[in-house]
Length: 94
Image (cartoon, rainbow, N blue to C red):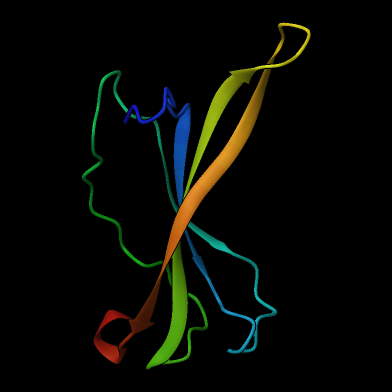
């Protein structure tokens, strides 16, 4: 992916419990991916890990890109940006 000159060093896919749905559980990392140079998409299969989910409740799927930028002194630092999408986990997927 290369939008606005951003080339992710890696991409994390996490599952989060929204604050309105208890909200006390830590994020669950579903995958950390390193994209091939020049890639414009990512395609993979993931299995939701065994955990104490609440059936038919709302969760948030979060994609976080971590990418390098040049600091004011010329050193490299990493910035995160991402998107999120609400999902529901149904009993067959638990």
